[in-house]
Image (tube, rainbow, N blue to C red):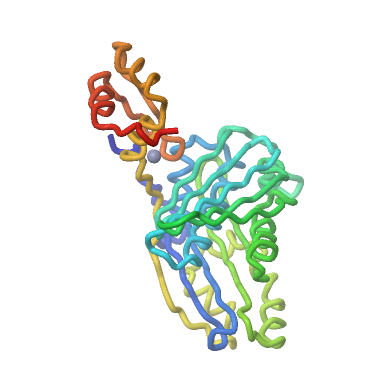
Length: 308
Ligand SMILES: [Zn+2]
């Protein structure tokens, strides 16, 4: 029961593997994360049979999830970011754990006409609403941050999240260049001024902001390291970490748990129905089939004492 993940396409102009770079500038006055998520966005688009506008939104959301997760610095934890807007695409959820990412979209096949400038209309796909970020550290209660999603373009919305929920002024750019089912590039950049950052450094970062306005085009044919060298020349960029990213879903064990979350009476009904019970993962679309005998064995091993 492996997820049916197609091999990513290999006709990329810049065939660099998906990864994330973590950097400091000026001896730690600012930190920078940059990521490339091209291949995994293509895989996600194929899995969800996504429209072009959905694919653009997914590429941006996956890039944001990768960078947020890296900021957590906790290998045991996971991060869930949900864009719940009123656009045609509905709710988009990305889950990141280490460099493993997965994404679910309520209406991945919803289509929209291109904007007048030829770009995908991500704002109309996502809409306005709320952006929530749940950090599960692997122990204790997860922490939840929520901010208004006012544009639906996602980059601005994540920047607002950092400023309002995390009290950290941040510059965020997210992008995905794709057409007719093919992802040419996807990725993002996140820059945060750290406490003690001088005004001169902040000015230097603001001067560079226009470089990031078309991030998907920038990473289309250059490596992240090449871009980092070019963009942060004179700001002493130091790479402090580099991590691979991949699309990965660990749903096999979760599906049994999801089944066991049902009331005991419902499970007994399924076990005696004489038909297999099929459950499909929202993230990787893998279908899991449980025979009545399997459900009976789960019932025997289950502890329902503290079930709600
Ligand atoms: Zn799955």
